Image (cartoon, rainbow, N blue to C red; front, side, top):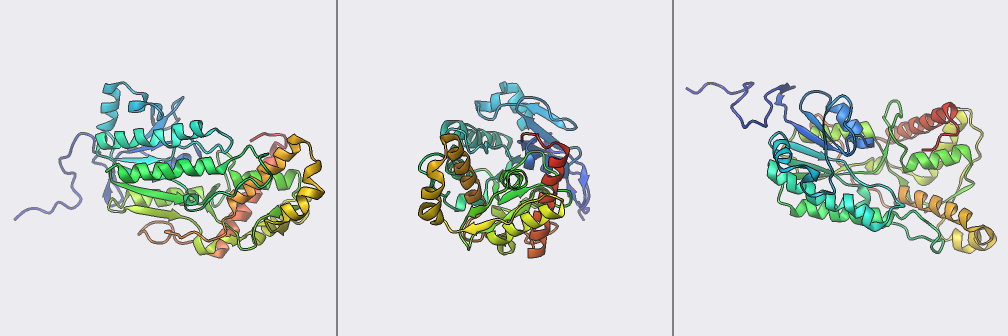
Length: 365
């Protein structure tokens, strides 16, 4: 009678690591964008042996790192180094992306499209599964610049590149899961984040300058998800190799209405000792009916650009229709969010920004 194989380390190819991680044999995970907001959270969540960070310029401290360039064939590595890395990797968590809304389309696509081509080529060589981080907003169209061309922030370029990236992964033939997070915030408990995102920029503007109004539809929602929650979901996906398709890392039906988001930002700021006035929500047509003729037309070009970019930030944060969510569907993965969770996360994020402003009020992020 054959002996039971449960719990044993089986003979395997050289790249597989026969170490225990809970009930599963741990695999070697390559993280791209490991020093970014989500990459940092994933790296910290998977902390331990079997994690490799793909670094662009310098090694990531505290983890095995390989310096490479996703924009170049073979990741910019010599053939021997490329093959050696491929022989070690079982799963690729592809977090790297250009999220600069002011970047030109060629610059954005260099990483968000060409980089995906190169990482899927590497995945085929490694016979590795890809967990590709996209964005929930590929399912939405970016709001057009309603100021007549003054905005220098163009979310549509980023979204177009992420849509192309998804298609490349889906057509690559490699095993994959596409993760679509909504607006990523800092840690769910501390609010800490390695770099401010769109919601933090909006909050900082409220705290430092005040925003009298926000042009956003009444039905729009602010769907926020903590970086550690997305990292927990990715860790669960790694542990479930049969998971495939699209995983929505979003608040879903728990996402807050825009008016409630604005109200909580102000209320939490006041609790933190910041003197801010309430923010009035107005519909999108308010700009053309009243704001443009009474205010915007008299601004200098620099001020017009500032207003236009603020409008672009707000519109990118508040889609009208709620996103689906996959939270709560994975065993050992993060649960679905509740409205109370969404409100707590928003308050935590605002408190973090307020704390950072007190420590360094002139800091540029």
